[in-house]
Length: 297
Length: 124
Image (cartoon, rainbow over the protein chains, first blue to last red):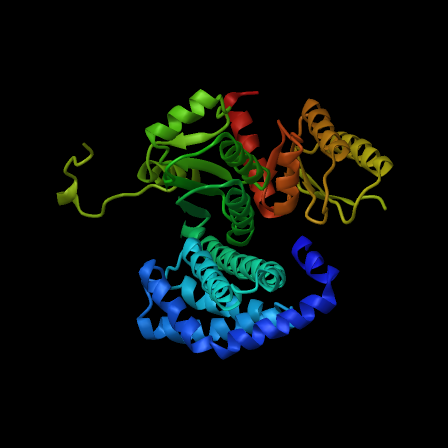
Protein backbone atom coordinates (compact mmCIF):
# COMPACT_ATOMS: atom_id res chain seq x y z
CA UNK A 1 0.00 0.00 0.00
CA UNK A 2 2.76 2.43 0.97
CA UNK A 3 4.30 1.89 -2.43
CA UNK A 4 1.23 2.87 -4.40
CA UNK A 5 0.64 5.85 -2.09
CA UNK A 6 3.99 7.37 -2.94
CA UNK A 7 3.21 6.91 -6.60
CA UNK A 8 -0.07 8.76 -6.17
CA UNK A 9 1.53 11.85 -4.63
CA UNK A 10 2.75 13.30 -7.91
CA UNK A 11 0.41 11.82 -10.46
CA UNK A 12 0.90 14.38 -13.25
CA UNK A 13 4.71 14.13 -13.34
CA UNK A 14 4.74 10.37 -12.87
CA UNK A 15 2.02 9.88 -15.43
CA UNK A 16 3.96 11.66 -18.15
CA UNK A 17 7.26 10.11 -17.17
CA UNK A 18 5.77 6.65 -16.88
CA UNK A 19 4.33 6.77 -20.37
CA UNK A 20 7.68 7.90 -21.74
CA UNK A 21 9.29 5.10 -19.79
CA UNK A 22 6.83 2.54 -21.09
CA UNK A 23 7.30 3.69 -24.68
CA UNK A 24 11.03 3.33 -24.27
CA UNK A 25 10.75 -0.14 -22.73
CA UNK A 26 8.45 -1.29 -25.54
CA UNK A 27 10.86 0.12 -28.08
CA UNK A 28 13.82 -1.88 -26.80
CA UNK A 29 11.79 -4.88 -25.70
CA UNK A 30 13.51 -7.47 -27.90
CA UNK A 31 16.99 -6.61 -26.62
CA UNK A 32 15.95 -6.43 -23.02
CA UNK A 33 14.03 -9.70 -23.21
CA UNK A 34 17.06 -11.45 -24.61
CA UNK A 35 19.27 -9.86 -22.00
CA UNK A 36 16.87 -11.03 -19.32
CA UNK A 37 16.74 -14.62 -20.62
CA UNK A 38 20.54 -14.63 -20.81
CA UNK A 39 20.79 -13.46 -17.19
CA UNK A 40 18.28 -16.11 -16.10
CA UNK A 41 20.36 -18.83 -17.75
CA UNK A 42 23.52 -17.34 -16.23
CA UNK A 43 22.04 -17.42 -12.74
CA UNK A 44 20.97 -21.03 -13.40
CA UNK A 45 17.37 -20.30 -12.55
CA UNK A 46 14.40 -22.19 -14.02
CA UNK A 47 16.59 -25.24 -14.62
CA UNK A 48 13.56 -27.46 -15.12
CA UNK A 49 12.42 -25.54 -18.20
CA UNK A 50 13.84 -25.69 -21.71
CA UNK A 51 15.41 -22.48 -23.09
CA UNK A 52 12.50 -22.15 -25.56
CA UNK A 53 9.98 -22.35 -22.76
CA UNK A 54 11.90 -19.79 -20.74
CA UNK A 55 11.92 -17.48 -23.76
CA UNK A 56 8.16 -17.85 -24.37
CA UNK A 57 7.32 -17.23 -20.77
CA UNK A 58 9.82 -14.38 -20.59
CA UNK A 59 8.12 -12.66 -23.53
CA UNK A 60 4.72 -12.95 -21.91
CA UNK A 61 6.01 -11.83 -18.50
CA UNK A 62 7.86 -8.91 -20.05
CA UNK A 63 4.77 -7.66 -21.88
CA UNK A 64 2.62 -8.10 -18.82
CA UNK A 65 5.24 -6.35 -16.73
CA UNK A 66 5.36 -3.32 -19.01
CA UNK A 67 1.54 -3.25 -19.20
CA UNK A 68 1.41 -3.26 -15.42
CA UNK A 69 3.91 -0.38 -15.34
CA UNK A 70 1.78 1.56 -17.79
CA UNK A 71 -1.66 1.04 -16.25
CA UNK A 72 -0.55 0.79 -12.63
CA UNK A 73 -3.01 -2.07 -12.31
CA UNK A 74 -1.43 -5.35 -11.37
CA UNK A 75 -4.54 -7.48 -11.81
CA UNK A 76 -3.70 -8.89 -15.24
CA UNK A 77 -0.16 -9.55 -14.16
CA UNK A 78 -1.43 -11.15 -10.96
CA UNK A 79 -3.73 -13.48 -12.89
CA UNK A 80 -0.89 -14.35 -15.25
CA UNK A 81 1.50 -14.94 -12.34
CA UNK A 82 -1.05 -17.26 -10.70
CA UNK A 83 -1.54 -19.20 -13.88
CA UNK A 84 2.21 -19.43 -14.49
CA UNK A 85 2.82 -20.46 -10.88
CA UNK A 86 0.23 -23.20 -11.15
CA UNK A 87 2.04 -24.64 -14.18
CA UNK A 88 5.49 -24.24 -12.66
CA UNK A 89 4.76 -25.54 -9.18
CA UNK A 90 3.93 -28.96 -10.55
CA UNK A 91 7.40 -29.00 -12.10
CA UNK A 92 9.11 -28.15 -8.85
CA UNK A 93 10.02 -24.48 -9.19
CA UNK A 94 11.16 -22.92 -5.92
CA UNK A 95 10.18 -19.57 -4.45
CA UNK A 96 13.72 -18.21 -4.71
CA UNK A 97 13.71 -18.86 -8.48
CA UNK A 98 10.51 -16.92 -9.05
CA UNK A 99 11.64 -13.99 -6.92
CA UNK A 100 15.04 -14.27 -8.57
CA UNK A 101 13.76 -13.90 -12.12
CA UNK A 102 11.44 -11.00 -11.25
CA UNK A 103 14.26 -9.16 -9.50
CA UNK A 104 16.51 -9.91 -12.46
CA UNK A 105 14.01 -8.33 -14.82
CA UNK A 106 13.78 -5.33 -12.53
CA UNK A 107 17.54 -5.08 -12.59
CA UNK A 108 17.79 -5.45 -16.37
CA UNK A 109 15.23 -2.71 -16.91
CA UNK A 110 16.82 -0.41 -14.36
CA UNK A 111 20.24 -0.80 -15.97
CA UNK A 112 18.81 -0.06 -19.36
CA UNK A 113 17.16 3.07 -17.98
CA UNK A 114 20.49 4.17 -16.50
CA UNK A 115 22.11 3.64 -19.85
CA UNK A 116 19.42 5.60 -21.65
CA UNK A 117 19.19 8.62 -19.32
CA UNK A 118 22.63 8.77 -17.76
CA UNK A 119 23.40 12.03 -19.51
CA UNK A 120 20.63 13.84 -17.63
CA UNK A 121 20.87 12.90 -13.97
CA UNK A 122 17.89 15.08 -13.05
CA UNK A 123 15.63 13.28 -15.49
CA UNK A 124 17.12 9.92 -14.54
CA UNK A 125 16.24 10.57 -10.90
CA UNK A 126 12.66 11.36 -11.78
CA UNK A 127 12.39 8.38 -14.09
CA UNK A 128 13.66 6.13 -11.34
CA UNK A 129 11.27 7.76 -8.86
CA UNK A 130 8.46 6.74 -11.15
CA UNK A 131 9.88 3.34 -12.00
CA UNK A 132 11.04 2.00 -8.65
CA UNK A 133 7.73 2.03 -6.69
CA UNK A 134 5.86 0.45 -9.58
CA UNK A 135 8.57 -2.16 -10.12
CA UNK A 136 8.67 -2.98 -6.41
CA UNK A 137 4.95 -3.40 -6.39
CA UNK A 138 5.11 -5.75 -9.34
CA UNK A 139 7.85 -7.82 -7.68
CA UNK A 140 5.78 -8.09 -4.52
CA UNK A 141 2.68 -9.02 -6.52
CA UNK A 142 4.41 -11.78 -8.45
CA UNK A 143 6.10 -13.15 -5.32
CA UNK A 144 2.91 -13.13 -3.32
CA UNK A 145 0.91 -14.69 -6.17
CA UNK A 146 3.41 -17.51 -6.39
CA UNK A 147 3.41 -18.16 -2.65
CA UNK A 148 -0.38 -18.01 -2.48
CA UNK A 149 -0.68 -20.39 -5.39
CA UNK A 150 1.76 -22.75 -3.76
CA UNK A 151 -0.13 -22.62 -0.48
CA UNK A 152 -3.32 -23.39 -2.37
CA UNK A 153 -1.71 -26.44 -3.98
CA UNK A 154 -0.41 -27.55 -0.58
CA UNK A 155 -3.85 -27.15 0.95
CA UNK A 156 -5.39 -29.18 -1.87
CA UNK A 157 -2.85 -31.93 -1.43
CA UNK A 158 -3.35 -31.96 2.33
CA UNK A 159 -7.08 -32.34 1.79
CA UNK A 160 -6.47 -35.18 -0.64
CA UNK A 161 -4.17 -36.93 1.82
CA UNK A 162 -6.72 -36.52 4.57
CA UNK A 163 -9.41 -38.03 2.39
CA UNK A 164 -7.26 -41.00 1.57
CA UNK A 165 -5.57 -41.63 4.83
CA UNK A 166 -8.31 -42.52 7.25
CA UNK A 167 -10.18 -45.56 6.08
CA UNK A 168 -12.39 -47.35 8.56
CA UNK A 169 -12.52 -51.02 7.66
CA UNK A 170 -14.99 -53.60 8.79
CA UNK A 171 -13.26 -56.95 9.34
CA UNK A 172 -16.03 -58.87 11.02
CA UNK A 173 -19.58 -58.27 12.04
CA UNK A 174 -19.44 -55.57 14.76
CA UNK A 175 -15.68 -55.18 14.46
CA UNK A 176 -13.95 -52.33 12.62
CA UNK A 177 -10.30 -51.44 12.37
CA UNK A 178 -8.85 -48.01 11.86
CA UNK A 179 -5.28 -48.13 10.62
CA UNK A 180 -3.57 -44.78 11.07
CA UNK A 181 -0.60 -44.09 8.85
CA UNK A 182 1.59 -41.03 8.75
CA UNK A 183 1.76 -37.96 10.87
CA UNK A 184 -1.00 -37.23 13.31
CA UNK A 185 -1.70 -33.57 13.95
CA UNK A 186 -4.58 -32.38 16.02
CA UNK A 187 -6.70 -31.51 12.99
CA UNK A 188 -6.30 -34.98 11.55
CA UNK A 189 -6.87 -36.56 14.93
CA UNK A 190 -10.12 -34.65 15.24
CA UNK A 191 -11.25 -35.69 11.79
CA UNK A 192 -10.32 -39.26 12.58
CA UNK A 193 -12.46 -39.26 15.70
CA UNK A 194 -15.38 -37.95 13.73
CA UNK A 195 -15.02 -40.59 11.03
CA UNK A 196 -14.60 -43.38 13.53
CA UNK A 197 -17.68 -42.39 15.50
CA UNK A 198 -19.81 -42.24 12.39
CA UNK A 199 -18.45 -45.62 11.31
CA UNK A 200 -19.40 -47.04 14.70
CA UNK A 201 -22.91 -45.82 14.09
CA UNK A 202 -23.27 -47.06 10.51
CA UNK A 203 -21.48 -50.40 10.99
CA UNK A 204 -23.04 -50.97 14.41
CA UNK A 205 -19.56 -51.71 15.68
CA UNK A 206 -19.02 -53.01 19.18
CA UNK A 207 -15.24 -53.15 19.06
CA UNK A 208 -12.83 -50.84 17.26
CA UNK A 209 -9.17 -51.60 16.83
CA UNK A 210 -7.10 -48.46 16.30
CA UNK A 211 -3.75 -49.43 14.86
CA UNK A 212 -1.01 -46.82 15.07
CA UNK A 213 1.91 -48.91 13.82
CA UNK A 214 2.33 -46.40 11.00
CA UNK A 215 2.57 -43.38 13.28
CA UNK A 216 6.14 -42.28 13.85
CA UNK A 217 5.67 -39.85 16.69
CA UNK A 218 2.98 -38.42 18.86
CA UNK A 219 2.69 -35.30 21.01
CA UNK A 220 0.69 -34.59 24.12
CA UNK A 221 -2.24 -32.97 22.30
CA UNK A 222 -2.63 -35.90 19.95
CA UNK A 223 -2.22 -38.42 22.78
CA UNK A 224 -5.01 -36.71 24.68
CA UNK A 225 -7.06 -36.70 21.54
CA UNK A 226 -6.60 -40.43 21.25
CA UNK A 227 -7.78 -40.84 24.84
CA UNK A 228 -10.82 -38.70 24.01
CA UNK A 229 -11.54 -40.82 20.96
CA UNK A 230 -11.54 -43.92 23.12
CA UNK A 231 -13.87 -42.28 25.65
CA UNK A 232 -16.23 -41.07 22.94
CA UNK A 233 -16.38 -44.55 21.39
CA UNK A 234 -17.18 -45.86 24.84
CA UNK A 235 -20.12 -43.44 25.06
CA UNK A 236 -21.41 -44.88 21.82
CA UNK A 237 -21.19 -48.36 23.20
CA UNK A 238 -18.03 -49.52 21.48
CA UNK A 239 -14.82 -50.65 23.13
CA UNK A 240 -11.60 -49.40 21.60
CA UNK A 241 -8.35 -51.29 21.46
CA UNK A 242 -5.16 -49.44 20.56
CA UNK A 243 -2.50 -51.52 18.89
CA UNK A 244 0.96 -51.01 17.47
CA UNK A 245 2.32 -48.52 19.98
CA UNK A 246 6.00 -48.38 19.09
CA UNK A 247 8.46 -48.41 21.93
CA UNK A 248 9.32 -44.80 21.16
CA UNK A 249 5.70 -43.68 21.38
CA UNK A 250 5.11 -45.73 24.51
CA UNK A 251 8.13 -44.06 26.09
CA UNK A 252 6.91 -40.62 25.03
CA UNK A 253 3.46 -41.22 26.46
CA UNK A 254 4.91 -42.30 29.79
CA UNK A 255 7.30 -39.34 29.84
CA UNK A 256 4.47 -36.94 29.04
CA UNK A 257 2.38 -38.43 31.82
CA UNK A 258 -0.64 -39.04 29.59
CA UNK A 259 -3.19 -41.01 31.58
CA UNK A 260 -3.74 -44.22 29.66
CA UNK A 261 -5.28 -46.18 32.49
CA UNK A 262 -8.60 -46.46 30.71
CA UNK A 263 -7.10 -47.43 27.36
CA UNK A 264 -6.96 -51.01 26.30
CA UNK A 265 -3.66 -51.45 24.48
CA UNK A 266 -2.23 -54.49 22.78
CA UNK A 267 1.22 -54.85 21.24
CA UNK A 268 0.39 -55.49 17.61
CA UNK A 269 -2.56 -55.60 15.26
CA UNK A 270 -2.74 -59.39 15.41
CA UNK A 271 -3.00 -59.30 19.18
CA UNK A 272 -5.58 -56.54 18.91
CA UNK A 273 -7.75 -58.56 16.54
CA UNK A 274 -7.49 -61.60 18.79
CA UNK A 275 -8.50 -59.51 21.78
CA UNK A 276 -11.40 -58.04 19.77
CA UNK A 277 -12.58 -61.50 18.75
CA UNK A 278 -12.44 -62.59 22.35
CA UNK A 279 -14.56 -59.58 23.37
CA UNK A 280 -17.09 -60.37 20.67
CA UNK A 281 -17.14 -64.05 21.58
CA UNK A 282 -15.57 -65.33 18.39
CA UNK A 283 -13.33 -68.33 18.47
CA UNK A 284 -11.03 -68.89 15.52
CA UNK A 285 -10.34 -72.56 14.94
CA UNK A 286 -7.94 -73.91 12.37
CA UNK A 287 -9.87 -76.35 10.21
CA UNK A 288 -7.19 -78.91 9.42
CA UNK A 289 -5.33 -80.81 12.08
CA UNK A 290 -2.06 -81.16 10.23
CA UNK A 291 -1.23 -77.46 10.43
CA UNK A 292 -1.39 -77.15 14.18
CA UNK A 293 2.35 -76.73 14.41
CA UNK A 294 3.48 -74.19 16.99
CA UNK A 295 4.47 -71.19 14.95
CA UNK A 296 3.88 -68.62 17.61
CA UNK A 297 7.49 -67.81 18.31
CA UNK B 1 -43.05 -32.43 27.25
CA UNK B 2 -42.74 -35.39 29.56
CA UNK B 3 -40.87 -38.50 28.54
CA UNK B 4 -42.95 -41.62 27.94
CA UNK B 5 -41.78 -44.62 29.95
CA UNK B 6 -42.60 -47.98 28.41
CA UNK B 7 -42.49 -51.27 30.21
CA UNK B 8 -41.10 -54.19 28.26
CA UNK B 9 -40.85 -57.35 30.32
CA UNK B 10 -38.33 -56.80 33.06
CA UNK B 11 -37.10 -53.60 31.52
CA UNK B 12 -38.20 -49.99 31.35
CA UNK B 13 -37.61 -47.97 28.23
CA UNK B 14 -37.53 -44.19 28.35
CA UNK B 15 -37.15 -42.57 24.96
CA UNK B 16 -36.34 -38.89 25.12
CA UNK B 17 -37.97 -37.21 22.13
CA UNK B 18 -36.72 -33.65 22.34
CA UNK B 19 -34.51 -31.39 24.40
CA UNK B 20 -35.59 -31.40 28.02
CA UNK B 21 -35.82 -28.55 30.47
CA UNK B 22 -34.20 -29.04 33.87
CA UNK B 23 -37.60 -29.64 35.49
CA UNK B 24 -38.45 -32.27 32.94
CA UNK B 25 -35.15 -34.02 33.62
CA UNK B 26 -35.90 -34.07 37.34
CA UNK B 27 -39.39 -35.30 36.60
CA UNK B 28 -37.98 -38.14 34.50
CA UNK B 29 -35.65 -39.07 37.34
CA UNK B 30 -38.51 -39.29 39.86
CA UNK B 31 -40.78 -41.15 37.45
CA UNK B 32 -38.15 -43.77 36.68
CA UNK B 33 -37.35 -44.27 40.35
CA UNK B 34 -40.97 -44.92 41.19
CA UNK B 35 -41.54 -47.12 38.10
CA UNK B 36 -38.60 -49.33 39.04
CA UNK B 37 -40.21 -49.97 42.38
CA UNK B 38 -43.69 -50.46 41.04
CA UNK B 39 -42.78 -52.88 38.22
CA UNK B 40 -39.86 -54.52 40.02
CA UNK B 41 -37.83 -53.79 36.87
CA UNK B 42 -34.33 -55.12 36.46
CA UNK B 43 -33.11 -52.66 33.91
CA UNK B 44 -33.68 -49.23 32.40
CA UNK B 45 -32.84 -48.14 28.87
CA UNK B 46 -32.74 -44.40 28.27
CA UNK B 47 -32.66 -43.49 24.59
CA UNK B 48 -31.06 -40.11 23.94
CA UNK B 49 -30.75 -40.41 20.15
CA UNK B 50 -32.91 -37.33 19.63
CA UNK B 51 -30.70 -35.10 21.78
CA UNK B 52 -28.27 -32.77 19.98
CA UNK B 53 -26.75 -31.63 23.26
CA UNK B 54 -26.12 -33.32 26.56
CA UNK B 55 -25.08 -30.69 29.08
CA UNK B 56 -23.56 -31.16 32.50
CA UNK B 57 -26.94 -31.04 34.20
CA UNK B 58 -28.43 -33.76 32.01
CA UNK B 59 -25.27 -35.86 32.36
CA UNK B 60 -25.36 -35.55 36.14
CA UNK B 61 -29.07 -36.37 36.24
CA UNK B 62 -28.52 -39.46 34.11
CA UNK B 63 -25.86 -40.63 36.55
CA UNK B 64 -28.18 -39.94 39.46
CA UNK B 65 -30.93 -41.94 37.79
CA UNK B 66 -28.52 -44.83 37.35
CA UNK B 67 -27.27 -44.70 40.94
CA UNK B 68 -30.80 -44.47 42.34
CA UNK B 69 -32.00 -47.32 40.14
CA UNK B 70 -29.06 -49.45 41.14
CA UNK B 71 -29.97 -49.02 44.78
CA UNK B 72 -33.38 -50.37 43.89
CA UNK B 73 -31.97 -53.31 41.95
CA UNK B 74 -31.98 -52.11 38.35
CA UNK B 75 -29.10 -51.38 35.97
CA UNK B 76 -29.30 -48.42 33.61
CA UNK B 77 -27.96 -48.12 30.11
CA UNK B 78 -27.86 -44.99 27.99
CA UNK B 79 -28.29 -45.61 24.28
CA UNK B 80 -28.13 -43.59 21.08
CA UNK B 81 -25.54 -40.96 21.94
CA UNK B 82 -24.78 -39.22 18.64
CA UNK B 83 -21.16 -38.92 17.42
CA UNK B 84 -21.05 -35.15 17.81
CA UNK B 85 -22.61 -35.36 21.24
CA UNK B 86 -20.06 -37.98 22.28
CA UNK B 87 -17.18 -35.76 21.16
CA UNK B 88 -18.61 -32.74 22.95
CA UNK B 89 -19.19 -34.70 26.14
CA UNK B 90 -15.63 -35.97 26.16
CA UNK B 91 -14.27 -32.52 25.48
CA UNK B 92 -16.22 -31.02 28.35
CA UNK B 93 -15.17 -33.98 30.47
CA UNK B 94 -18.74 -34.94 31.24
CA UNK B 95 -18.52 -38.29 32.83
CA UNK B 96 -21.21 -40.93 32.64
CA UNK B 97 -19.34 -43.50 34.76
CA UNK B 98 -20.52 -45.88 36.07
CA UNK B 99 -23.32 -45.96 33.54
CA UNK B 100 -23.47 -48.47 30.74
CA UNK B 101 -23.67 -47.05 27.25
CA UNK B 102 -24.71 -48.79 24.06
CA UNK B 103 -25.28 -47.98 20.43
CA UNK B 104 -29.04 -48.40 20.26
CA UNK B 105 -32.05 -49.87 22.00
CA UNK B 106 -31.36 -53.41 20.85
CA UNK B 107 -27.75 -53.26 22.02
CA UNK B 108 -28.87 -51.66 25.27
CA UNK B 109 -31.18 -54.56 26.05
CA UNK B 110 -28.35 -57.02 25.33
CA UNK B 111 -26.04 -55.11 27.66
CA UNK B 112 -28.68 -55.21 30.41
CA UNK B 113 -29.25 -58.90 29.97
CA UNK B 114 -25.54 -59.59 30.19
CA UNK B 115 -25.08 -57.29 33.19
CA UNK B 116 -27.85 -59.15 34.97
CA UNK B 117 -26.37 -62.54 34.21
CA UNK B 118 -23.04 -61.39 35.58
CA UNK B 119 -24.72 -60.30 38.75
CA UNK B 120 -26.36 -63.68 39.09
CA UNK B 121 -23.13 -65.58 38.55
CA UNK B 122 -21.25 -63.42 41.03
CA UNK B 123 -24.11 -64.09 43.39
CA UNK B 124 -25.12 -60.54 44.23
